[in-house]
View 1 (cartoon, rainbow, N blue to C red):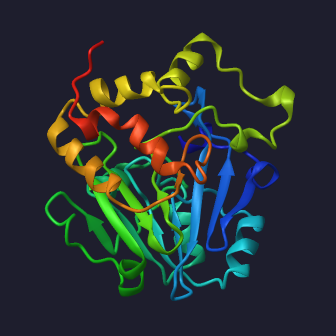
View 2: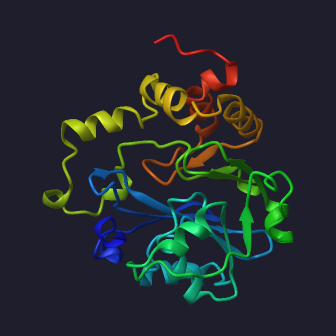
Amino acid sequence: MSSKLIPPNPDEVMVIRDVTPNVVTLSVPFLRFGKFPVGGRGTLVRLTSGALAIFSPVALTESAKAKVASLGGDVRYIIAPDIEHHIYLSEWAAAYPNAKLIGPEGLPEKRQKVQDDAKIGKEPFAVVVTKANGREVRIGDDFDADFDMEFVHVHPNKELVFLYKPDRVLVQADLVFNLPAEEQYSRVPEDQKPKPGALGKLFNSFQTTQGDAMGMKRFLWHVISRADRERFNESVKRIAGWEFDTIVPCHGETMVGNGKEVFEKVMAWHLEGKHAKK
């Protein structure tokens, strides 16, 4: 049940941040597998047209609604960037019924199978990105003008990665974490913050970009890309060819200003074709 993963009082703990004048993050606590404090983050983007797109939507709190309204209120696109970040799609779709619902292949079927979670509805998707159409699929004229998209379909979570070209911001879900999730837990009272423990610290070591990021490099190489490393490498190289300065992840700290450098570091083996030695 989604209720076990999300905070019961999201408006009290949500951190709303203007990353740029057109890119806003909505950060909240979130427990991966109900155990690991990885945080969650929605990203609200104002397109050149004035329309809004929400990626990985989190709880639509009163504060979030006010922020949407301050940006014009025209939510035109609701995007689940992989098959995991979809809990709040129905909540946003109900509030903004004219918005297009976008997601990767496998997600509509996954949501249809859910029978015991009131948060997850059966709304139809306007656009489903697939392995077959991923290179040429169109989402909307204004959206397509502002964004580049790469479908990393060989990733276990079926990752959609987006570049918001006007502000040079990469928006993604689980391709790159950046733990620990400090901002996402910054409004949680100290005595209520979860303690990672030994297992949590081990998990964090595979999902941090700090230092040489060797744990993340090994995790991406040996776990995430092992099913089809050639296709994974192709996607990573296309993303690395984009012009971006900032990366907004769903889990952990936003990388402002040094995003391209961090991406090239954690993806070095995939960009260089270097086989892991250890």
